[in-house]
Length: 492
Image: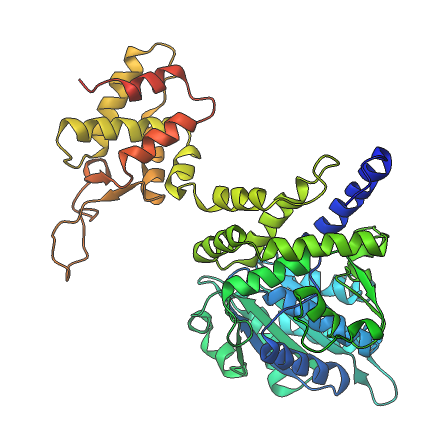
């Protein structure tokens, strides 16, 4: 336990532990867990491109939060420790959300290649001419060998949206296909149907190499809950230095999770430590604690991970989401609660945080994110459906009820009709209100939202239960008193 007699020292230690664990949870994007075959595949592609000058292209596909970017970061980190990657290759990272135009992408490529001075005020006819000039600038030596290029395209599907020319993808894949220069192009996307978005000419030059990452694919026989428990121990444990002899254990003694990690390496090393590259990026230093204090902390973390209520809470979170970032956010909130009066994490806090993440209904949160006008239209529609025994309503009927309420309350601001119609359409886009089907037949998916009916007269029904609206109104911040009173009044 901490020495509570020295308040200053305790406060500083808690502050250091809290800062270190937050960096470990949020900023450590180098360590990669599981998916060993997929990681080996990516490592092999990049290594062959950097060391042997080969050209490759591949797509890394998987849902958000499964570790696609972390996989690439860990591979690049390993290769940089094995070879002089800064002199042998150039890493170019593009993002479909940022580099949405070929000109912007080319400008970023030039900057990352550090060739702005070479390009200068040159004018090129096509994108391909510009890119080939950049590659020619990288050639050096008597044999005119070019540096290897590694292109990482985040949000790959946004580079091939309908209505956009895929000139960038075509030229990159063409270089790898014809082996004009040593280049490895890796796309990262969460869309399984991304190949359907590619143009024919782009498909013909792509290698059709797909690397799939799916969550909850840990070691064989391990469940998602076990994986979360291991991750919890790994992220919340403090660094310990072990010697070779500390890895030897007596026969018949049951090993703990911490001791299992000690047996991984048989050399002097520091376990559970944040990589120096991450700390230098965050302008922090390695945590300096006594061995006794770190062992006590790690033992407490290990015991907490084995508690039944923690296991139940983790199981609930696994059913809710497979995104590892959500679990890291939970651990971040847990670490933030550390203080001199509460120097150890509490399992009850972990359960409460997970309950807050899982328990709130999504529809209630969505209703609370609406504007005052949109929420008023929802209340008007709810009252109208109560009067007409659940019959669907159109925009004119909802507008009539809202106008009646606005006229009865002089404090309510007058809103133009087009603005109200736009708010009504936004409710439809959020699927808070849904169009009524014109038939109950399962073979007819058409509804009343056809060209034959004006949009003001299309029939809609409320898609959220009244209980959710009541919870949203109850917890709505800065809701005018008149609207609260209007909601709670009986319908007349």
